[in-house]
Image 1 (cartoon, rainbow, N blue to C red):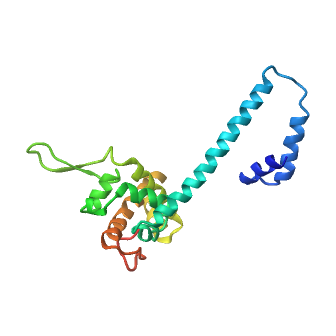
Image 2 (cartoon, rainbow, N blue to C red):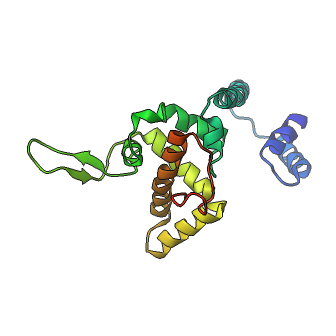
Image 3 (cartoon, rainbow, N blue to C red):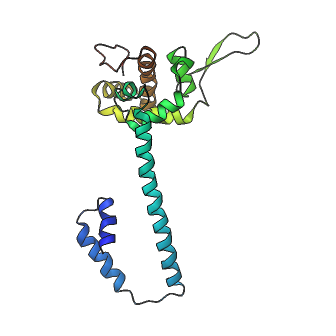
Length: 204
């Protein structure tokens, strides 16, 4: 009962004591015996123990990632941008590497798959084509950060404007993520913290 209640508590189940008691009573009331039930119960217990170990290790890794992220010189800069916490910040920092690799925000956006990719062939005129590739891990991290920033008034205003233009939710968030790349590139290049739009017009 105590282990069951503890498991329910981790899942934030309401009235967990009563629910745990109901589950326990229902299990104890079973009278049907199925061949192999004992073996199945043992396997389930073993898998549950292994899963508990995996979850514990995951929590430990999250702490290690956070500690490693805070040791990066870019950590303070990245975390100052609304929507970026330790985990997303660490992922973005790792995927970007040195910001000197990207001469312009457009290059960074194209690398992340958030903007058009410069294209030329032979003597053809240079053109920009929609990116079908890009770094999907970085794109996903920037998308999640943009989504998390919707509680930030300037970001919400930009998102709402895109929605009013007829864009779907994901499209509007991607537009916001692309806009924030301009800000992120400027912040990392200049080594400055995020400032509100009144001070930094390009901010999201």
